[in-house]
Every structure is written in C-alpha cells, then in structure tokens.
Image 1 (cartoon, rainbow, N blue to C red):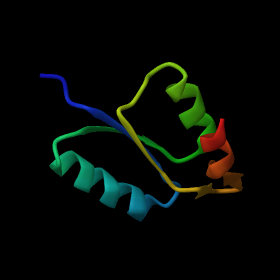
Image 2 (tube, rainbow, N blue to C red; image 1 turned 180 degrees about the vertical axis):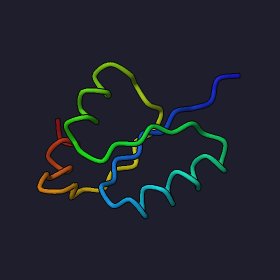
Image 3 (spheres, one colour; image 1 turned 120 degrees about the vertical axis):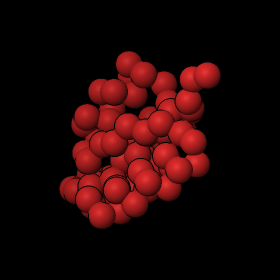
Length: 68
C-alpha cells in the first residue's frame, strides 16, 4: 500500500516539525520545504495528494504561487 504524500511548505522550523508529526501520525508520508523555490521545483516533478503551505514563507508570497 502506497502512502498518500503531503507536501509541507513552512519556513518556521518548530511549526514545520509539528505539522510533520501530525501528518505522519495520521498515516501520510511527508516532504518538507522551507522555501518556495524548492517547493515549486519539486511540485513540477512530483504531484502530492495535499499541500499544506504557509502563505508567507520568508520574503515570498505563497498566495501568488497558489494562484499559478
């Protein structure tokens, strides 16, 4: 059985780790991103089942990426 994949985009380490624990305990696999550039490169290659994204990652506006 293949686990559903969740991408987590969060630049705050504490929040990122907490989200990862919660998602993994719910039975999903995770891939973590601390910046939008690495996330955007990865999402063009792999398609996650769900994305949990901080809308303001560093200096970037995640909302603009979502609109793409």
